[in-house]
Image 1 (cartoon, rainbow, N blue to C red):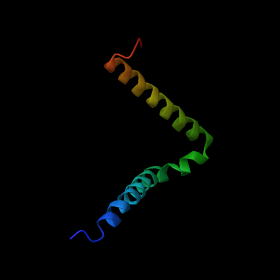
Image 2 (tube, rainbow, N blue to C red):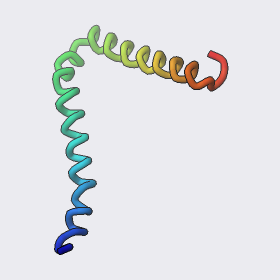
Image 3 (tube, one colour):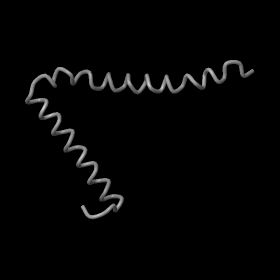
Length: 68
């Protein structure tokens, strides 16, 4: 009844890693040509940093983690 159970259990981390990598690659592959132009590279980096700062400040204010 449990033939190969542990083999299947040990396959799940590999499946999870390959799924996450596939999602990241399919998400960021269209952005690769945009990174060749310095203007769009700066715009993408600044949007990413400002988005991260926005989410950080929003979560800190929502959770009451100090003065904002």
